[in-house]
Amino acid sequence: MRFLYTIGIYIAGFLLKIVALFNHKLKMGVDGRANTFEILENAIQSHDQTLWFHCASLGEYEQGLPVFKELRKLYSSHKILLTFFSPSGYEIRKNTDVADVVVYLPMDTMANANRFLNLVHPELTVFVKYDIWPNYLLQLKKRQLKAILISALFRKKQSYFKWYGSMMRRTLTSFEHIFVQNENSENLLKSIDFQNVTLAGDTRFDRVSHQLEQDNHLSFIEEFKGNNICVVIGSSWPEDEELLIKFINEDTSNDVKYIIAPHNIKTNQVKDLVSKLRPRTILFSEMEGKGLSDYSIFIIDTIGLLTKIYSYADIAYVGGAMGTTGLHNILEPAVFGVPIIIGKNHDKFPEAKQMIDMAGVVSIKNQNELNEVLKGFIMTEVKRIEFGELNSRFIASNKGAVVRIVDYLRI
Image (cartoon, rainbow, N blue to C red; front, side, top):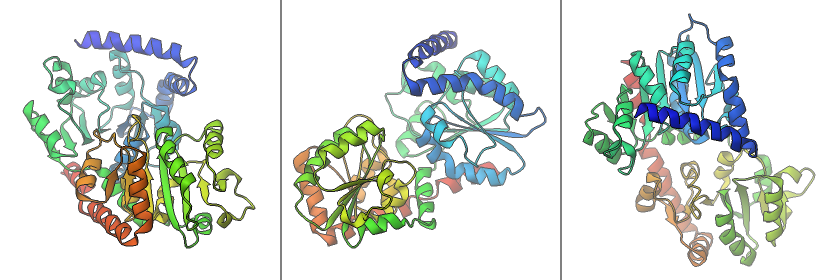
């Protein structure tokens, strides 16, 4: 089975190179992986003590970051390697100060796994959430090198729990310990006789809680917002924007400001978004010298500001769940005590279900529901405060995953 898997990886790698000729994002990954071994040969020496952190992409990096920071302190004399599989993680965080070396993870072949571990020889390996690569992990186990999986989520339909999943089940045994986000994941692992598991919770609660300790002041947002109610639309996709544009265009109130931070900030797509909006709209890239208070809509056509912008929100809409691309991080606005609206496709996000049931998140299915919910929040301050406080308390009550993980590693 492992041999067939490896053959499949070789085929996938070959096809990836062909498709990359026509796709810039994929090409970045292919080109980056081609340089990995040369970078490692120059950056890591045989006598170095090393740690290896691996994340699939940016979301997993943000999830693992609070643990990475603590391990950086705990293992201050070690050289730390951070690997990504996706360009969307590597390109944004390749200069992070949490690691000494940041590279793309080469394709999961037996030869690559052997060469990689010969160079890196990690004393501790930390994988985040779900990016499980059998050849790398089984080689770690063969070499008796310590590995843990953090913030893991498992679902019954995954191959680990199917009759044909023997290789993937064996791969899980490469982890000395697995820290899961919820009880369902814990029970699924125990059902296949994996006992070295701890229900630690989601490290993202610790991550977003740290945002409260940061300086979130943005003078240009204060100028734009003034004393008005502010609706922040974060990481929106076209499916979200279709409903929101209609609501905004039909909103006759003068005391509501809208900040839109679209997921895709390519120039042509931002222009298309602007063309559909009737109220006065300003772009972040064009705001110099403009009186921001004169505009009703502020489009953030850059990255890296959204977490701070949420601190100015009276209401937040978090995108991704009206379509099938995946819900973006609802914990980021929740920590600021903001009521949150999301789309309908959130089944794969356990925190969304919990926060719909227990906190201040509302899921909408169509235009009528968006109109009703958003208008209700805009018109009723008491409702905004009630839902926002529920979110704030939910975040505070779910912190602690980082402490549980790091305490285990200190033993």
